[in-house]
Amino acid sequence: MEGEVAEPLAGPACATVILPKLDWRFVQRFCRILKILFPSWSNQSVRMFMTLLGVTLSVQLVIYQVGLIPSQFYVVLSEKNYGKLKNLVLFAVMLILINSTLKSLDQYISSLLYVSWRKSLTEELHSTYFKGRVYYTLNVLCKDIDNPDQRISQDVERLCKQMSTMASRLLISPFTVTYYTYQCFNSAGWIGFVSIFGYFVVGSIINKILIGPIVSMLVEQEKLEGDFRFKHMQIRVNAESAAFYRAGKVEHMRTNRRLQMLLSTQRSLMNKELWLYVGVNTFDYLGSILSYIVIAIPIFAGDYDGLTPGELSALVSKNAFVCIYLINCFTQLIDLSTTVSDVAGYTHRIGELREVMADIAKKQSTGSELGERERGVGSGKVHEPGLEPDMAFVLDRLSYKSPVSEELLVKDLTLKISQGTHMLVVGNTGTGKTSLLRILNGLWEPCNGSVEMTTCFGPRGVLFLPQKAYLTDGTLREQVIYPLKNIYPSSGSIDDERILKYLELVGLSNLLTRIGGLDTKVDWNWDDVLSPGEMQRLCFARLFYLQPKYAVLDEATSALTEEAEGQLYKACKQLGMTLISLGHRSTLKKHHDIMLRLCGGGQWELTKLKEA
Ligand SMILES: Nc1ncnc2c1ncn2[C@@H]1O[C@H](COP(=O)(O)OP(=O)(O)OP(=O)(O)O)[C@@H](O)[C@H]1O
Image 1 (cartoon, rainbow, N blue to C red):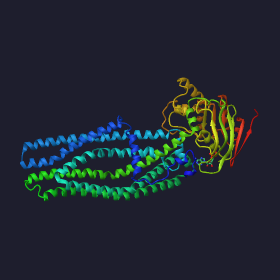
Image 2 (cartoon, helix red, strand yellow; image 1 turned 135 degrees about the vertical axis):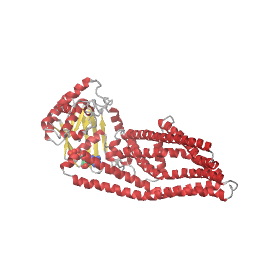
Image 3 (tube, helix red, strand yellow; image 1 turned 90 degrees about the vertical axis):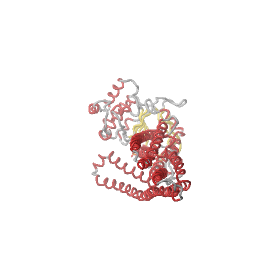
Image 4 (spheres, protein in one colour; image 1 turned 60 degrees about the vertical axis):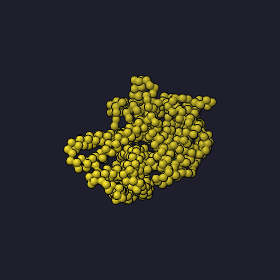
């Protein structure tokens, strides 16, 4: 695939598939993600993280006190001291209340951290995804990255969730491990301390081995999850077409097939996870026995021979708590193995997406053509100095092909598209008409020759109406002013008049009554409620509203009658637009001055339709 994708734009940008593992690559990708989550010391996430550290440390202090209480009960009960018992009970209840409050606070801050991380990471991904035409290249031309949408929405969510659940445990580990190691060393000597550490090292190595195959399988599972979701989305978007075909059975079978693939991978993943769970649980329970063995060593060595049974019980209770807690610190870290394998999987998927997107963005921003186009978008800026003012595109010996084929669609096309000369592009299916527009728009790169765009995009420049009418989410006004964010020109009610006038001109006044106003919030998908003809009419309203100098129409009237087509073309011309149209209908000829016919196999011919 790599070599076959449109070379300068997408080809090398697509990643070579390397099996994701818990390796150095993971560490690098994870550190890069951490930089996004903690961009500076003054960042909100850092402040929350520090607060979390404070709360978790306080929890540990309280837990330490709570842990010592049983040994104090031994002493008080063996002394049968009622006054001390009452005070101890009150003290214990107070500690438990403080502990539960702090633990709840810990969970609350972790949840806030999750939201804040998700925001930072998703916004960072969005900033590259929507930069230039990265989203187009990624979704259409680059086949090596599966389900970018799922990576941005679901994988980021899960990564942040897992990391936030890990955060407090990881944060506190260095402190608790150091403190309880010291305490354990005091109570059980170096043998206890070394055996606990040895136990942890062995446990970690075994878990690292068990996690290995899980990471790549988790990445595969997420891919299949995305494919399954995409299938449902495909049915949702094309429900009507499928229903016309009565395609319920075949779609049922295909959707189930994707589900089966997903579930069988999930089963394999669970089989692999089973061994990890066995490892983790064994480690947990062996740990509790180890703590008593560690305490037994000084007892059997006779270190505590001089103590009474009551004092010995209190000491065993205190030492057991310290050793158990140290082992518990380690087992908690080992327990994180399953979370770590998830984090590694998501980190690889998000890291891979970031790398590919950055690569595409870099390639696009270094493309000089793109730079020029980008500067023009919506700004109303005009021509480059030194170029003829009435030109839109200058094509010089232009050759291009489709990304998956070596055969040229068009060879050595030389042409100037100038103001006032309406051009019709015709040709058989698949001869490269829409591809010519992709080249003009900078979505694809030519193989040879050059395309110079001498005017800008947007109002007063060039506007493309694509073959598939695209309606975004939002109000009717937002459909009409698309792709502008704000009304143009920013003239308040005058703008309303213009919009209403153009809706009437394209024959959609009834739409306004049906919807209830330009700014009525709608919760439907415009594609589902408008007919193809209405969608095309709405796109023309968009065109009239933006009034570009050049309108590039890709079969923009294919769903309309010839009469409606004539009216819309007439209106375009009255508004001073120069038209570049693609289409199969012979009636289109009368609206144009020249005709470019693409004959296939790289051949083309240019003819005059009207004498100047
Ligand atoms: N994203 C893509 N990846 C690979 N090949 C593509 C892609 N888009 C188009 N093609 C191929 O490029 C060739 C030219 O496609 P193009 O859309 O330009 O045809 P067209 O002349 O506009 O056809 P039609 O009249 O049906 O609209 C076709 O063979 C098509 O299959």
